[in-house]
Length: 206
Image 1 (tube, rainbow, N blue to C red):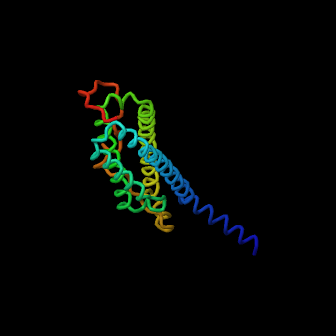
Image 2 (spheres, one colour):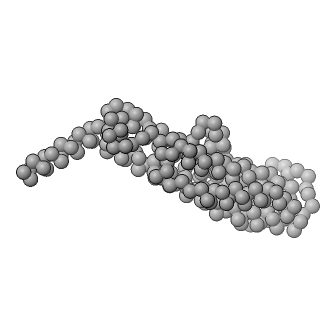
Image 3 (cartoon, helix red, strand yellow):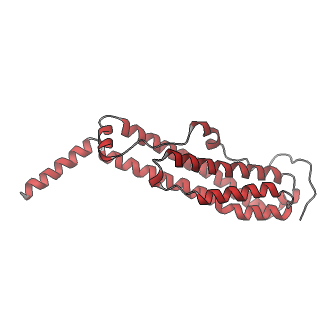
């Protein structure tokens, strides 16, 4: 009896492996791993926002509207967490993406406003934060693209016969991905390069 049980387990393992069960498991873990990296990079950006806002405020107190936009967008991002277990919900992913997009837009507007304050641009702390933000935006783009690719590979796997039968049997579903209508926002990081010519200087509030 013991030998029969062992043989039965080996047979089940062989059948599951041949039907793509192990491959689906592996790719599902890849998706979760890539999503964790996306979250890490978004969190890195969110952590930069308070110091960035305070530094700009020291020179540009009159830009209250833009500073408030950034602060509010950062707060919204902080209150909207999307775990790996929520990745099958397209509505939650869309809401998360929209919140991150709002923060990206607010940061872009803040950087445009900063062009009007030469003393701010020359501030060492601001330059350091600028460099960190630029690097983080690049890392976000890389992490997001890797996640998109991982989801595409996973979805192809669970749709392909006979893997689709195994996926249906064990409850593995196609995962939503970043939406096409937001592809431009997904692939384009906010501009934080101050190498070009600046607009006419405004009076410094510092």
